[in-house]
Length: 139
Image (cartoon, rainbow, N blue to C red; front, side, top):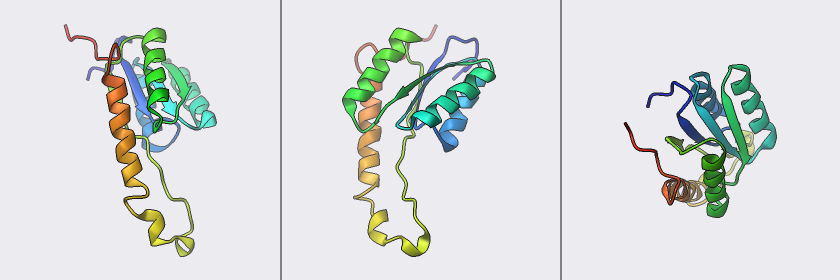
């Protein structure tokens, strides 16, 4: 992973918050062209601004990564607008937001959350690798 020279194209899922947002900014500061995927348009816009202020280029695409068609469309747009995908940071997630005293064990069960997240990871990875959305050959 070189993340330099402005030729590298990186896709970051969940790029509107947390470590995923920091990861997108890190790549952007190193001249990578970064596609930002997340549901939240406000967070995407903020991340895009942060990358651009640092001199990078960002393409925010509001995307529900559990929707394979939406991810496929995001991959197509990435290749069309900024180039072949070199790096995929697949880290979208769901969380339980609740005061601990109001939280129930059922809200944290793997079949409710982690099963969905695993399916998202698999679908996103498959979509970003299929067809023309493959990593460009190394020279």
